[in-house]
Length: 289
Image 1 (cartoon, rainbow, N blue to C red):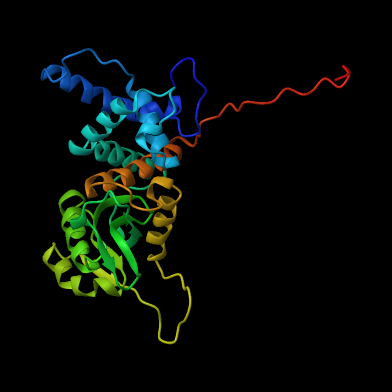
Image 2 (cartoon, rainbow, N blue to C red):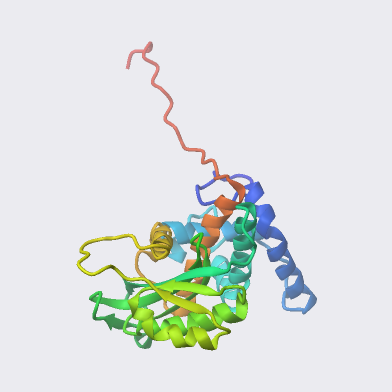
């Protein structure tokens, strides 16, 4: 946090910043070496991260950022760059390995769960990225995720809501096979039933379909499958993700990664920022009004 302003609950603490600072500093240095930085950096990278996390958690528009952050144009500039060049995913993946390691797990998972979530989109979304999910009766976009058994994201893609889960799942399986070859088993629901053969093609990755038993009504937690719903529950706490208000699907994916980054920063350090609130001084009752 910069000097002279009160902290927000979304600000990263010193311990949290130590985890991601090397990646962002190396990114800034690499740009300086290649000559892409025509002027010396003006804003601390930590303040840029704080501003992005503030937008992500509160859902505020970029141009409504509080004035004690860097200008919103500068914050969005960094946000766009980190989305395009994959820096946000690099930070996210680093934290996922750190959280798994501190939990006594291997840095790379061997099992995962796959699911999707349809959410309404805003008027700013490109028409070709919006569709209607007839099953959920939602017009907007669909988030396809695959997460480890701790609920931490391995891959995510955002499509129009009318894209079938099977098609999104095929892309996710290919991504996980390329980036996380240690995964040998994936749990999914009946919508992914056609992907069993795809798992066989991907070095015998086993796709296990879990469904409710016959005659079962209402909400029923299913073995392993419920963990993907838990991840969606975590994501829903970010107001930026209450609906998809991003203009592009790439920005939608980036906002999901930023939400998980904030969650994992807290889990990796076991800390949360302390916010200083403005308090009203007690009235002096001895002096007549």
